[in-house]
Amino acid sequence: MQSIVFLGSNKSGTSRDAIKAAEDLGYFTVLITNKDRFMKQRDEFHDVKKMIYVESIDRSHCKEQITILQQQGIDICACISFVDPYVHLAAMLSKEIGLFQSSTDALFKMEEKTRIREALKNLSVTPFYTLFHPNELVDSFVEQYKNQLPLILKPPASNGSKDIFLVETKSDFRQGLKQLKKKHPNMPVLVEEYLNGPQYLIEVVAYNNQLNIIGVIEQEISNDNRFIVMGYKYPAALVHEEYEILEEAITTILNSLDLRDGSCHLEMRNIKGKWKLIEINPRMSGGAMNRILYEGTGINLAKEIIKLYLGEIPSFITSRNTHVYARFLTVSSAGRLLKVTGENRAANYEGVKDVYVKPHCGSLLTEPYSLGNRYAYVIASSDTQEEAERIALNAAKEIKFYIEPY
View 1 (cartoon, rainbow, N blue to C red):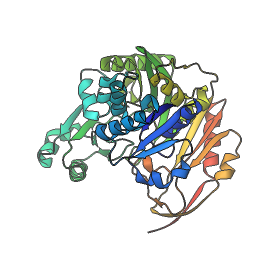
View 2 (view 1 turned 90 degrees about the vertical axis):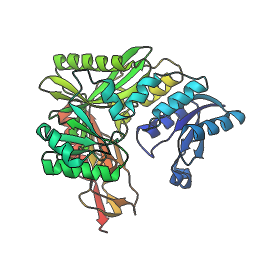
View 3 (view 1 turned 60 degrees about the vertical axis):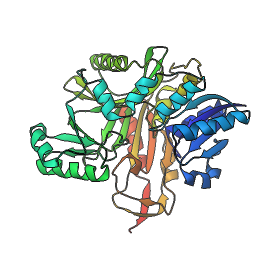
View 4 (view 1 turned 90 degrees about the horizontal axis):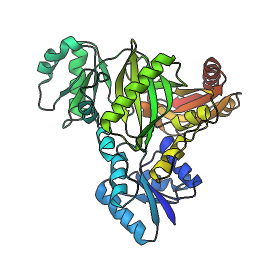
């Protein structure tokens, strides 16, 4: 029984798309999860043939479960993760059991923000950064770097814009450091230059030392200093020269990391014609990215990445070139969800390709503090970017969340 083992998954988005893609490819799908609620919701995971609960997704627990699977006669063909922070672990386990060998050192560096900054510190794409260590005094640190304001504060292991702050004054700077120090007492704080310019997400797959840029997507970010991405435009409207300089910057970054085989996504800002790296992650972007790229290009990127990790040749040939716009929805106040209306009306708009509402009735919702607080999206496509955006925004207005305050 040929099988693919996945380390971790979300209920929706790219990580779940990958499991469905593995099923479509004819593999027996195994999910190792540390979310006990998934075991209680087992009937919602029709694409997972075998679900295994572990207290912690770490090397010892996963290696033990893989050994048990092999003893049961299950032929493991790949061990993969599309979820932070298990990508490097999956790559190492794959190597240990004699499967596909990806660029494990590069993936390891990408999994933690300070490691990636240190690895790329001599490149022009890297903005100013420093570290605030747990044993340092807040007031002294603020005085030392006050002339660098505005700055971005983030924990090195954060993802999905969680616990990321823009500080523009000494008071904000001091408060932000204290807040992160309290929440993550044993972890340094990454302090970076704030870069003001349009932001783009770039999906890349390296195969046999050949870099393939699958898509460049412009991100629309909220203006509340939380950096929540509310909209995605594919393809990004870059002139030829901008794209060439971007491609050169990406090649320099990934060659410096020695990424020969594996996937990643980068977030970069265009600062007056110069590209700066915001962050890089050793996996495909989550959320609706697989569907966005599929509607724009015809490529099921999650499926092609799985083929890469199976040791097969992935295909990145586009079958269509369509403009796509994805709009995400949040709520303005916290409370318990009573009901959601308008999902079917939104789906019936001509040009709408997908409508997704994440929470069930009874769920506790909150105003957006991270990407995880986006509760629905609408994806639309058209021959022009303006039309795709218009369709998605109008359809999104149909969706209403009814919340009981708590």
